[in-house]
Length: 556
Ligand code: AMP
Image (tube, rainbow, N blue to C red; front, side, top):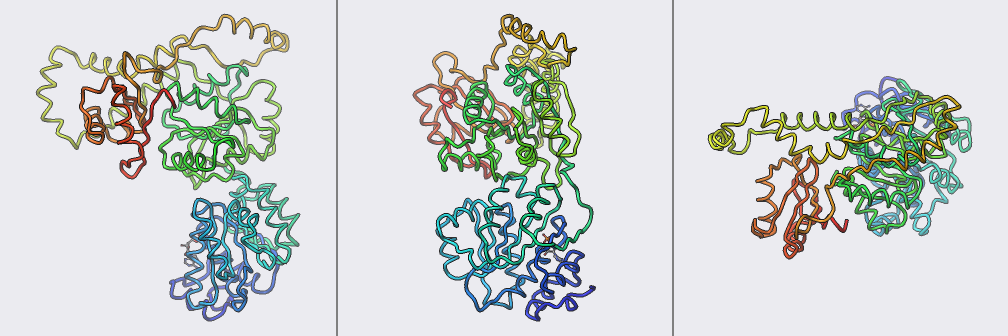
């Protein structure tokens, strides 16, 4: 069909569409709208975002809804609050000339009582994220008895985010549902399963190319001894300096302990698991979303439904038992057209499980070596040098300092300056890795594999003492040590940074000891009697719209 007029929509809907400037239906609209208006019950629309699928289900829904009845008749389930709001906004525009139809957005992270009030006012269409909807069902704040139309938008994303059970629960709790419209960009086997269980002879419409798996994710694995997992994790983090990552563990205890250990060693990481209160979890999530935390270590249950843009790496500290769980985990990266990496740390006994996942996910996994200490140092070194070269010196009055600098460095060659800069940044790091052992577990012949356990205990006994990164730990001398989530990436140089923290806290330079600035975070030595004043003045303030976190590095 070439025009909206031919589709059979009410005039008051057509009027709004015309005002929007939509001249002709997109392919998914041209195919889906007549099918849905003709009374087809179930439909699967395979279409990416941006194809006009919101109108493909929104326009026929408005046509079919009984505006005289003031109870929920249609439920649109989508994975994120952003999409939820987007759908509501769009449908609100489509229904400009049907004032009797009311629509409400129901999503987590926003006041539930306001949403309950809105529902009670009498709405016909509810657009919800699964978690919050279940919350409302459990509080008996929403009645799904009369829901006739159930729309699942971005169904594959919802499954990726771990909402499978919630979706099935919703499908089972909409007894009067006679139409289910499912939209998805991909068609993984789980969606086929849901559709065959809960839909009757659905009409299938495909627009564009459909992927079976997310091709934007590179699946990598690293083989090591179980006792080297933690070291391997550190190597992988250190080898990827720009990582904005999500690490998965199987247990709460692992998430908590690894987080504490990594924090002590200077990494910017927080745990997310079920032993934290809801408020603590919301805080951690908020900070991670704002990139105020670089790494999050979570259990599967706690990470369920989390929607964070731009995650560069997902790391499986251990492989999950379930293939579906692997899909949820890896689906947290490589989103919205971006590429991502999903790394798994495995030991020999898990290789079989890995092959099984690989077969079901239908994408090849790449076996990579755990980087050596030298590789890590080289990578960090180049990363630092690139940063040095890219540092913006256009602002600030550096030229005025040049004569003074030239005089100071008159007898020092450029090579020496570079070496000194490198030493300043890398000395401790190089020391940490200078004796680092090879963490890769090499594939061996059966014979030698049988000897592994013996070798392991010998290795354990002979293992070289590897020095900690020493970023944290108590401050030197009589100083306390504070952590702050600001660093060179925020555009600070040491002088401007000192000025900033001293001005905010109204303290004098004399209270400070050594200040160790890194890209994302810094560590400040401070006279213990001034530490609280500084924390109170700075923690929670905003810098360029981002919340500053400052705390005692030793009690983190
Ligand atoms: P969606 O795939 O629903 O996210 O839609 C993507 C964008 O296309 C939205 O901004 C819609 O407003 C717009 N759009 C939807 N249908 C049409 C159409 N027939 N003509 C022009 N733009 C459209």
